[in-house]
Image (tube, rainbow, N blue to C red; front, side, top):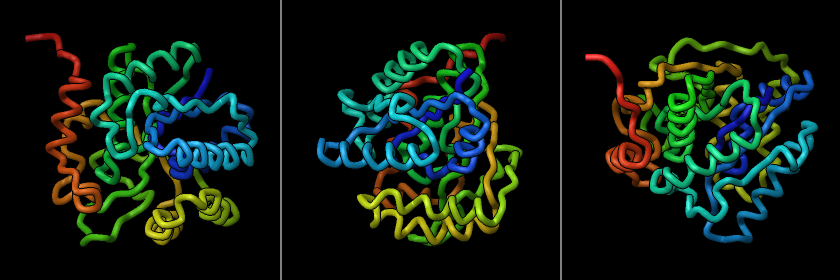
Length: 253
């Protein structure tokens, strides 16, 4: 039975690295599916190589990593406009894997629109396939903060109870050090890393299992980080999500 990570970008694995390391030490089968692509093939190859190196350090080989976004025009920052193709690619990949224990995705939290789309894709696939367990890890959001501040690995209460994983001081340091595996993303991590350091110290690592209907709600009140950072309004993402991956109809009167 495989643990399958539904991720957007090559480096998103940092957000759930403590879980990856524990599962690797336990000898569990872990698969990594990446749904975003990059308009520069050179950048895509460089970022994929960085993820290969980072996961290789955890004992995970390239045969456990798949770039599903390749060739479906699921561009970085535009995944919400490629949801039908992304869902088809995810569905086919999960069929090839076969025995899946659970899906793990970034949380529905308004940090990056691609991260939220991974949460949506995982939930919609689970809803259509009988309710397979879906867990989400908080990555970053900015609820209640002035721009450009953000919180990392800080759970939103609306996403439900958090199951924490106890970490030693050494494990926390190693988690923080993982960001240095991605030199191509040094600029982005320069903004995220201080929040990650604070969040790792204050919150540690944990997973949430929100109600599936959560992905039909605005992630939180007030401006979302991606609205401010990328100038992508929630209304655009919502409309694309509803058109590309509508919620299943509820039975009953």
